[in-house]
Amino acid sequence: MFTAVWRRRLAVPFPQIRGGAYHFQPNPHAVLLAHAYSTATVSGGRDSEPCPDTISYLVSCGLTPAAARQTVATARGFRIRSTQKADAVRALLRSHGFSDADVARIARGAPLLLTVDPDRIVRPKLEFFASIGFEPSKLATVPLLLSRSLHNHIVPTIQFLRGVIGTDDEIRRGFSNMPRALQVNLDNCMRPAVEALRQNGLTSSVDLSRVLVFQLGVLMLSPARIAEIFEDLKAMGMPVTDRRFAAWFRAMCSMRRETWLRKVALYRSFGLSESELFEAIKKQPTILLGAEETIKRKALFFREELNLEMRDAMANPVFVAYSLEKTILPRCAVLSVLMRKGKIKPDIQLPQALYGSDKTFTKKYVQRYAADVPDVVKAYEGKIKFKGFKGTSRTQWH
Image 1 (cartoon, helix red, strand yellow):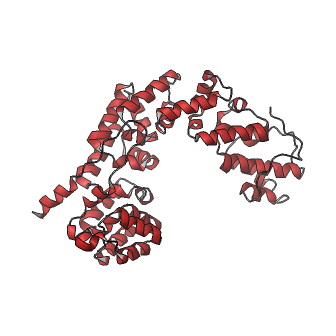
Image 2 (cartoon, one colour):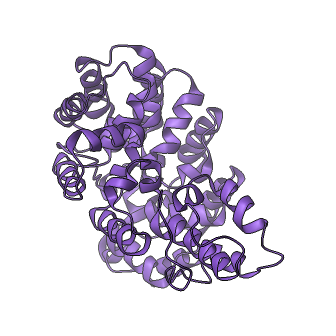
Image 3 (cartoon, rainbow, N blue to C red):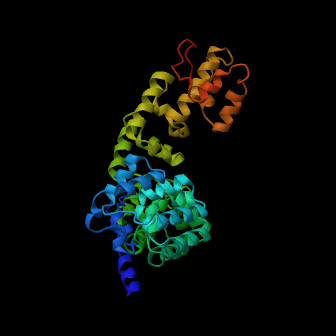
C-alpha cells in the first residue's frame, strides 16, 4: 500500500513548453510535494501558518532571514518536523561534495528535500549523478532536478540523451552549459525538440550531438520556435553543414524571435548593411547576446570616447562582443594611465591594443609596466576608473 501511494505521488506532470525561448516554469510545490512521502511531514491544520522554528532552521542552513521567510511562504504548508532527518539530508549532501553554499541553495530552491528519507530518496539520485560525473555545484543550481523521480524521469532522460548526444562526458558538458534543461518533461518536450531538429535538416548524428552539447537548452524550446531559428539562420546564409552552425544556433536559442528582429534593426541603425551585419554574426555570434541597452551604450562609448563608429568596430566583431564593464573599460583605463606616464605613445593603434585575450593584454600592458607604474594594476582591477583619453592627445583608429 505504501509503495502504491508513493508512486502516485511521483506522478506529477510538468507543464508543456510554449513557443519562444526558455519558457520552462515548473510548479515547485507540485514537484517537491511529489517526494514528500508523508503529508503529515509537511502540512496539516495549523501548519499552514509560518513556523518560526522552520524559518530558524533554514537560517541555520545559510539562508538570510528574509530568504527563509520567503521560502516558507512560497512552499505553503512546508514545515520541518524532524531536524534530525533534515540534518541527515544536509550531511548526505556534504558527503557527496556539496559545499555549504550548495546546501543553502538547495534548501532555498527545494526545501521539501529536507523532509524526505535521505537514504531511500536522496542517496540513490546522488549516487547516480556521481556515477556519470555530474558536479555537485552544477546540480545545486537546479535543486528541483533532485526532486524528480529517479526511475520515472532522471534515468530515462539520461538514457534518451545517450542515444542522441553520445557519451556521458558529452551529456555532462551539455548539462554544465544549461542545467535547467534536464528538468523538462522527456515525452512532452525533449523528444519533440530533437525530432524538430531532425525535421529541419539536422540529420547528421554528429551535428545533432554538437548542437545539443553547445546548447542543451534547445530541449526547452517548442518545435515551432526551433523551426523559426532554422529559417532565420538560413536567411543569413548559415547552413547546417557549416561547423560553426552549433555556435550560431546557440546564440539564436537565447532570445525570442521578436528580440532578434529588434537587435538586427538596432545594429542596422548604426549604418551597417544587412550583409555586413550577417557577416559579423557569422564570425562572432555572441554579439547578439548583449541586451539592447548594452549595445546602445557600447555604440555611444565607441563614438564619444574612441572616435569609432559601430560599423568600423564591426570590422572585428570580437571587439564588439567584449563586455564594456569587464573588458573594454579596464583596458582603456590601463592604456590611459600608461599614456599619461609616457610609457606608450598617445597615437597607439587602439584596435590592436585592445584586442586579444586577458592573458595577452595583461602580459603586454599590465605585468610589463607594473613595477614602474603600479597604477596599471589598480586600473585593470577597476580601482582606477577610465575617464577618457583627454590630455593624452586624441588617439587614432587605424
